[in-house]
Image (cartoon, rainbow, N blue to C red; front, side, top):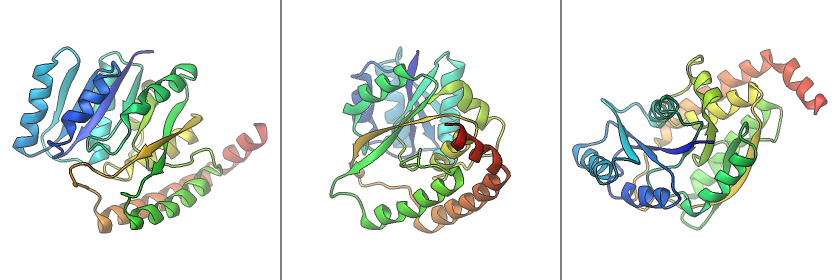
Length: 245
């Protein structure tokens, strides 16, 4: 198993250095995806790559494509460089990098499964965001006919790269905050099993959130509708899977 970290970055210049340092402390190379950041943040990323050119590289998108667009570019880059798995972690410092060994141990024990973070929040979580997640959880349980995915919105996870890139190269998936949910559901539909790993989550160290309350919720609602109709076409297979297990 050959693993790297893929970190989507959009104007998190003040926080990303600490995240890279923490990830590198666990021995993982880093693919930093500059999602059309402003020049100051872009310069920070270039500096991180210069300081550790053997283990840190920057994939630069000419314009902002959204978290999903950045992740898809990073996952494709990781596969093309010979990695078998990619750890996704946010650039803003909300994820607990100290849990990386636990994620990697699970991935090593079950390399064909996707290891997905299940957030354990502290008091920093915005209550509106916390309660809003439950609507998505319910839709995901409906669209998979399963409780296998405990939290589909946590962007701290380990992907097996071959099947994940095969999916994103063959199906249109949302490029913004809808990506994390949709890619999990579609991988589940294709038979990928999920391992859920509890992990502490706190909200951004630099105070920057790129979640657009109006438009990202509109996108997520549209995604749930599309997935629901997709689930109906897969209903016999999903029901048979439940019986067979």
